[in-house]
Length: 547
Image 1 (cartoon, helix red, strand yellow):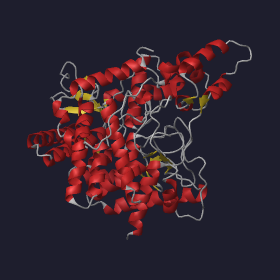
Image 2 (cartoon, one colour):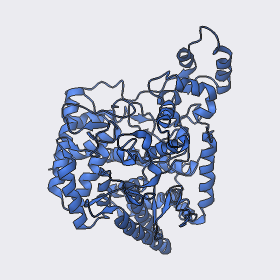
Image 3 (cartoon, helix red, strand yellow):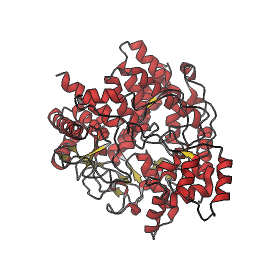
Image 4 (tube, one colour):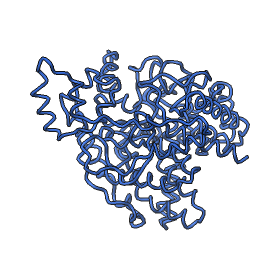
């Protein structure tokens, strides 16, 4: 490895500590209810297990590379490593048997749940909440899990930890189910992570400490605030999380002071030719993902014309986007090894940061800090103008990702284009154009396809995903495109219900082009559970029932 995982994580945290000045702590007294951040011995699996880690992953002891890094050791690491060194050369040594003897396999959430076919889809989802709930973690865990102080809902299947952007869409269903306390628990956990490691990682695993995920924290705060009936209670929600909102923004904007015409990109921050600032996805690591170690090495070997470190960072950065993987990030839409995520300014990320700036402006105004409120409002206005300038494609009448190295649109149209509608960035005419493209090119019998490219990747056609259906439906509604929003909703609900009736499951993604299938493509089998599908479907079903 060019740089150890631990050093990369520490580098991130030190940089964040340097950039989080007293301004980022403004309003901290409003957040006294947050639990104190406790130290955690961050030592990810590659660092902790050394050659044992490499041997297990390269030998594909488990079909899924995530299995081993999620295992919990039954003895202290030094004892296991000593046993491995003493035994590995013996003629009868069996690597998988050794691992099973010394490690506890991760729990497969919802795998043991038995569906009751007499239940309605909504009743099924509500029965799953306790199954997918993880109680407060043991602070003395020896595995890769970063312990959290409050209960939380996991997606299900191979995903037995909290995931950042998944959680917003799960919360939509928790709100319908009346589980506001769980929403608050999960927000408090995210605040705890921000206070503990300086940002919200991809998930609460120590091998995720080099990246975040789409920044939905501000949207989560807004969701919880809007669930309160009294204005004073709403105000209290914004003030409670203001310190962490400030730190979240500092994380994404770390490097803004270093960018220049000669050095246009630093970490997540990109300076455009006329001085505008937008953001990209960026992972601190330039080595294989621990959870997909062998897969990444094999991918980099196919990219003969590029340094392996560059391929690794671009793969990891695509994971930060949540769209892992999609033709959005590829120079050649058919070839994963052409991934170039760090060259791309994404529509969705910048729409989310626009919303973060607006929520920061609102929260600071509520806290009586009018100058800071005005500053964030100005930043939001500047970002909105830059989104309209660089990410709106007049020729296609659609929002597109922009390759700032090539100074051109990527040409890979995707449902990321609905984010400016969801956050009310688009003009009415732009929204009408986007709606027209969605109806003509993206709408299928089961909902909206994620992209128009069929290449076997899970975030490309023919797959549809719950979060993108919700963003599309809500974005269309924001601009009065109610008829199309209704068609998207009805198609998606019908597909979800059909798969449930046929299989007894809610799954993480669906083939929206073939109503007879679930889904396919990607690095791992289709997972059942499933947090964000449950959340979005329950929200949509509640609307149907209310009509």
